Length: 246
Image 1: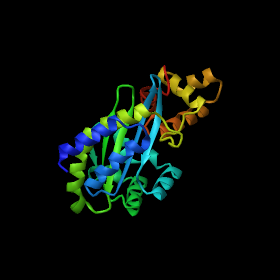
Image 2 (image 1 turned 135 degrees about the vertical axis):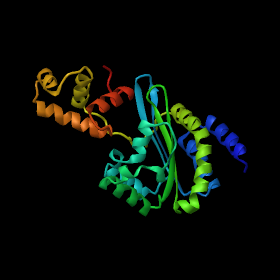
Image 3 (image 1 turned 90 degrees about the vertical axis):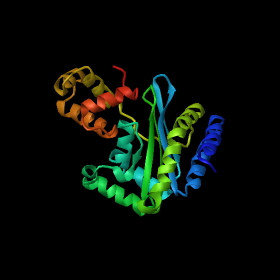
């Protein structure tokens, strides 16, 4: 089917989708059109003006998803990091070598290839309230064979991701969707709030009547959960995601 015909049909279906399955079906069909093997859609969507909800439409091998979740790979996944920090598409083969040199990240990417996620691409989208959506699609074949098809699919998904985001936002959170991000504890939120107010760990410890070590512990946990490099980055991300309101 010609490119624009696929786009017209899929965008129309997404505009009229009323269930998670009706959102996932066009993604599956686009992957089928370009002979791709796996997909996943994930995002944080705005349920209320101050509340974001996680969404996951999984077309990856279930065993890989279970392993990914159980080992908290989201905390080190370079694809997820790219989606939080960029709006441009990502060909996985273009992940910088300096990132893949990290032992844990390199092992994660190698392990994903063992499950058939050999060559892939990701198209992210950011919304005005801190929402994030992204679709990933992969092939079992190496880049020399699959890259031309992945590039064509990437062009189409760049047009369709806003429709995917709108569809899942309209449908809302469903009961069987697993969270993509761990919830921050009340104490982690408190520590981030005081950090956002410019307080040092020592000052926060006095305010909360705990030790400075305890404050640092909660801030380090928040940094890890939010997949950030430091507390300043974590504060900015928590604010953008409406997890704290200074």
